[in-house]
Structure formats: structure tokens, C-alpha cells
Image 1 (tube, rainbow, N blue to C red):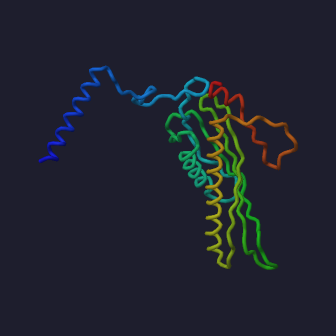
Image 2: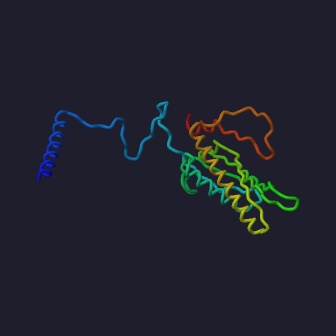
Image 3: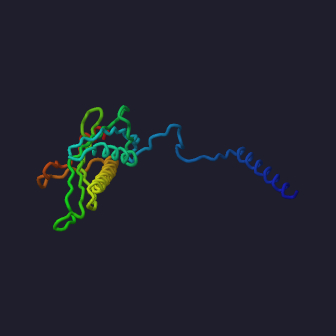
Amino acid sequence: MRCRYFCLLTFYFCLAASFLLAGCGYQFQVEGPGPTIGGSSVPRADGRPAKPPPRIRIMNFENRAFEPNLEIKYTAYTRHEFSAGSGAIVVSQGAPADLILKGQVLSVQIPSVAFTKTDTLESRVTVAVKVFVEDATTGKVVWDRYASASSEFFVTNDLQFNRVLQTRALEQAGRLIAEDLATQFMNFLEVGPEPQKPATGAPAAGMAPSVPSQSGFQEFYGK
């Protein structure tokens, strides 16, 4: 009985205190603009509102290597990694987009890294890929990269099993390339293109230097 009386007394005390504070003009507020329905742009350091993440459409890769079906897998890996962490929103083929990514599987090399006089014990898969991103409105290239990755696999006396191991190595290299491209593209969106450096030598055969389009970036982002 005494506990019930104490609870009622506490309730009436809190109720009276709330009326008293309201009558004295006290209000509890959260500093800042607070949440808004539908979200709002967060101002940047220079005072201008930040642009929303660009919508990017990733086209099916072109396969210029001798390995079949790589273009399908590498396109899927790139879409997955760009959706997970590139700073852009990946949209489907029929949806409106701000940017368009196109890619090419340039080459696949499978040298031996461990061998005897008669047998190969271990091989390495090295895949080279080129991608470039265009402004969907103007068609100008705003970002491009060459990327490569390697993955090793053991060689056995079973030819079919060797093929399975080689396929897995190709898939691993493709995932590494897609992850690297997504990370580089996110950095590009955050800080802009890298400053162009004077050429110090001729590029490797079939590999032109990667030079982001400064004017295309500035035109797309209005800087």
C-alpha cells in the first residue's frame, strides 16, 4: 500500500513539474535543422550543397581475351562491387543514369611459376581489364582505368580438375579487379581526378596511360 502511494505521489509531482516548466516558457529543442521528410543535402565545406550520388549504368564488358564467358562474370563482379562501395548508385539497363561504365577484358596470361624439368606444378592467372566512364548526357569520358590482378593455382595430373582450378583463379582475379575499380572510383568522386603528370616513357605494348578527363569531371560536377 505504501509503495502504491509513493508511485502516485511521484506521478503527480512529475505532472505538476511539466506544467510549471511549460508555464515559465521553457522548451526542449534539438540544435540544427533536424530531420526532414525525404532527406536533404548536407552543405559542403565551401557552403554549397553536396550533389547526390550519381547514378551509373554498367554495360556488359567486351571480351578480347581467349577465355570464354569472362565478360559475363566480370560484368557481374563489377556491378556487385560498385553497388557495395563506389559512391555511386548502380541502376539497371533501362533506368535513367548520369554515368555509363564500359569495360573490356584485354588479356589473360597463364605463365608457370613452379615447375620441374618435365611438369608444371603451379601456374598464375593474370588478367588485364580496361574501363572508362562516360557522362550519359555529353558522352565525354570523365574517368578511365587499367586494372590487373593475379591468382595462382596448383596443377595436377587431372586435366579436368586443372580446368576447374584455372576457372576459379580467373574468377578470383575478376573479383579483385572489380573491388579495386570500385575503390578507385569512390576516391575519384570524393577528391576529383589526379593531377596529370608529364610522360616519362612509352607505355607498355597495348596499354595506353590512364589519364582522367579533368574537363569532363569539372563539367559533370559543375566545379
